[in-house]
Image 1: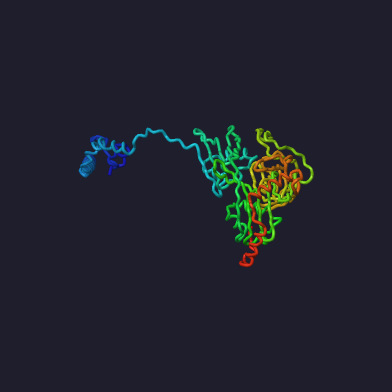
Image 2: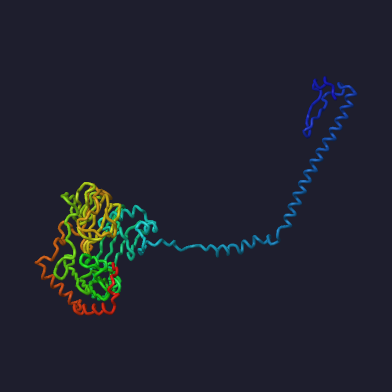
Length: 493
């Protein structure tokens, strides 16, 4: 359109409008020839028109945009509900009242959690599960178990027992735990410092009252004894007394009679659940059997002959050094605290044979964090033995064992300073020195005490006032004639 030589000489100035290039001549008309000047004038007129059109379009767009915004604002204003204009007034008058009713200011102090908890023991409960439910730490539980090592009262919690926990109101730390066993016995575990507890055993003697029970065999001895008010444990004890002299399934028949004198403990007029059999007489159709409790804790027949075998003094064969004697005020070798030592420690290699010191029934086979593996055996009514820190146990709970029978092997389990056997003897639920305690070592009453025993037996027989033997025999013969099926052997215990 323009001569190339003019463009090369920069005779035109280039500028942009709406991103389109425009050229304006920068030379005077005197330089540019006339034909070219007319052509440039015409093109500039076209460019001016185009520029005005673009500016007009921009003004129209802005005007349209402002019009739309104004229209939307007006429509929005008229579409709002009319009561909105009163909303500030409602907020000032009603909203505070509603807020006051919904959230009234609380001036009462926060109630602190109760510091005392009581739990009645039910079947399946353990100390660990109870403490977990109360959010008491396992470390605290082990502190109490350490204090209970010499008692082992917490190892077997029975339905009817009760635990009471007292916590510090500020720190929620356990301060006291009470174990209620029965009205005549409870144990209190008291915190002595940040890491230890001590215990106090409370035993109330109460009053022991005698009671006579008469029974007649109908079905089995077990069922007949329960029917007159004896407990299952009492019936089991009676059966154990006569196990070597009387076959309950063959020799006892329907119509035979029996009598029991027992004494029961009452504390403040309430029965504690503790009882003791003083004397038993069983009148069979062709024989009579009896058993009477003497002061040594064993039972004898009316002639003074023992119904149980004598005890062994030591629970092992051979000689082993006593490393720690029975001492109610011993200082514990591990903790350094004063703690009762309720047994005798025999230093012996791990694996040494441990023997039962008397006939009895295994009542516990346990593993304790401090006592280690241990066994408890009940010998008759008044005697109990314990064997602690074992490596291997050869008996099961409920098993009947004989004097001198192998029950376990010694070890070093639990909290121990070395391989040894800890042996305990309890008489009437109290720990005694097993080396010096008076235990039945003979098969009959000593001659020096025969008269005392005979007097005691006479007093019990007077209480029983048993039926004459010929009356029993006559009753049995009549029963045999009238009801021969009653003589069929029946299992009992």
